[in-house]
Amino acid sequence: MSQAERFTTIITPAQTSTSPRRARPTNYRHLFYSIGMQIILIGLSIVMVIPFFWLISTSLKIRGTEFTFPPVWIPRPAIWSNYSTAIFDSGLPFPRFLLNTVIITLANLIGVLFAASLAGFGFARMRFPGREKFFVLVLSTLMLPEIVTQIPSYLLFRNLGWIDTFLPLIVPTYFGGGAFNIFLFRQFFMSIPVELDEAARIDGASTWQIYARLILPLSKPVMATVAVFTFLANWNAFIGPLIYLNSIEKMTLAVGLLAFQGLRGTEWNLMMAAAAVMIVPVLIIFFAAQRYFIEGIVTSGFGGR
Amino acid sequence: MNSQAIATKKPQPKSPRSPLLRREAIEGLLCITPWLLGFLFFTAGPMLASVWLALTDYEILRPISFTGLANFSKAAHDPLFIKSLWNTAYYTVLYVPLHLITALLVALLLNVKVRGVGVYRVLYYIPSIMPAVASAFLWMWIFNPNYGLANALLNMVGLPPQKWIFDEALAKPSFVIMALWGLGSSMLVFLAGLQGIDKVLYEASDIDGANSWTKFWRITLPMMTPVLFFNLIIGIIGSFQVFTTAFVATKGGPNNATLFYVLYIYRQGWEFTKMGYASALAWVLFIVVLLVTLTQFKLAGRWVYYETEKPG
Image 1: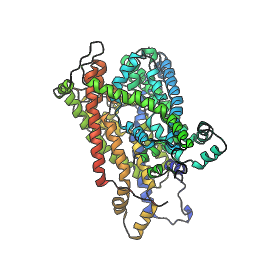
Image 2 (image 1 turned 60 degrees about the vertical axis):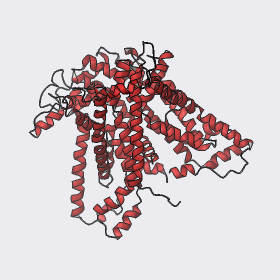
Image 3 (image 1 turned 90 degrees about the vertical axis):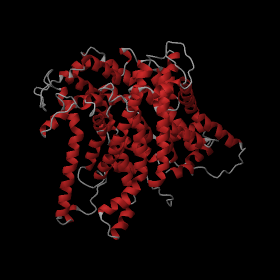
Image 4 (image 1 turned 135 degrees about the horizontal axis):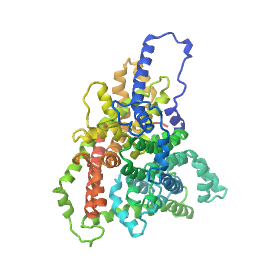
């Protein structure tokens, strides 16, 4: 009843024509209603999309022409080389930022998929004393403002000599993988019939075989959901990299952009090109994995009850 | 959904001392051991350390001494602490209700069956996943007092240009506008809630001759209160922690009008390396968030409607 079915209908509504369209008599009230709705929806779309359009438009302008008022919407000629200037000739190692971000994101992806699924498995399919209490503890950490633990954590990592390395941004992930992700895994695992585990046990499978060979292979949708959110969280992460990464070669895109602002902050065409470079992968992942974004939001949204 | 969660405990066929059950308990605990260690080392431990730090004058390169509640009395006389608390409260009070209302209205709009609704849903959702730094860049440029898009729009309708994020009075509302652009994820949670409402309720009210207005107030809104409550809690917790956009776009200016609370903690802790004071400030935030959340849960009984027992 399945939640999965409901998720897909949220973004791609089912074919709704209950009666064939041709059979419907012309209904002027309905027509006006549809037109009115379209006008409102299109108007709102313009509000949502215009900032992006403005971003791309500015990023293609000749240096200096971004400073005209009222603004020109379609730059002629379009200077695509602004992008290569922003990436390769800005005075900052932009490709390096990209590589660092990818490394941190991938390392976190592996950690989250392993640690959060294991904890979710424990909470969903094993019986042990204190299970419900521990799970409440997991959820309660979601409400904890990050900044409260940030200062002592910083001092801890400083004592370990981990400042200006990726370790503070990666290692904690391997211990739990994040409350939100544990929650998503647990919810999904609980929807798998327990009889499967029991059958496997009768056949002599150990708990770890059930986890690795039975449950995980059945859990690709939730793994994809967790993966897209982990990507997004790491790609967009700011305060962590800001605190822990000091040298230019270690920076991620998010803090690298900040350095970019310091260096070229008045060249808005380049600033917009740099911002676009950071945005494009997010859009690609979104369109490739749209469904999983929706699932995660819907599951967690309901989970808050 | 959660009732289902609790109901997984099966009747236990074996005695509690059965070796199988003991083994399951050990293996279950092993499953959550990585999380438990993480919780101890990266959450509980730091929280305890933070309490202790809050009671000291710790600065990174200087000897530490215990100062009791001095940090808290210092905060009470710190005008920037008061200002940042005020800024954050102002922002929260403006942003959270506006955000909830617009997200719900947009979700209602997108819950109807019109052509292309799937495309609209995607368009409205996308801004909410934008990287905060990139979107801060974009909005700094939109709010540029001389060449920005916002003033171009004002110009089109014949209004005088504004200084937006560089205007002390307009800076916080400008940040609210910026944040409202990202209403997409709350909108989707609302949309999911709307689609979860049992159609039978509407059909029954049709038979009773209710109009759309009545249906909204008597069915949709009451049924949506759990989702509203969830978005309210998440919205408040989030807006208390607003940081990145202000850090990038205004650095707290003009005249500290966008010095939000976490920004001030960051400044004390990492720019001035006053880790003791910053820890005390962080605890104030934690306690405020906790109190506000608990109050909301208390008040929830009065307005949040829960379907108690669903058959099946």
